[in-house]
Length: 99
Image (cartoon, rainbow, N blue to C red; front, top):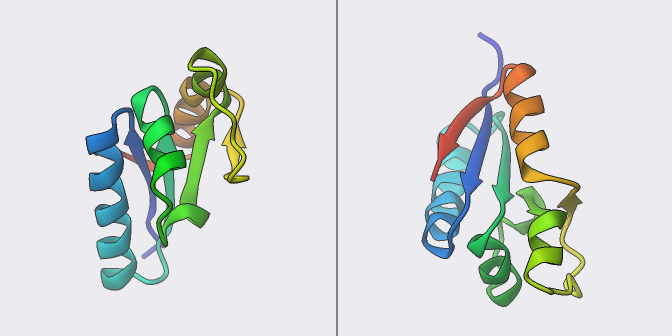
């Protein structure tokens, strides 16, 4: 069986908290799984305000950063546009879960 590739989409602060829990749980249950948390909209400010052990899995939407006038001084990884990353990963066979 191929390793799981899971894309956790977090568009709100609450969804980000769920995505982080989901990522930790998935990592425990399937250590070989490839997991990506994609934060856009309201989740971006929450991600910057509350660092977490799952941050290496996190990608911030650059469009959301710009729209909200936020500075990624934490140096978290970014993607140009969440919608593009969501579509590309799904086309590559990643499982999509909205947290």
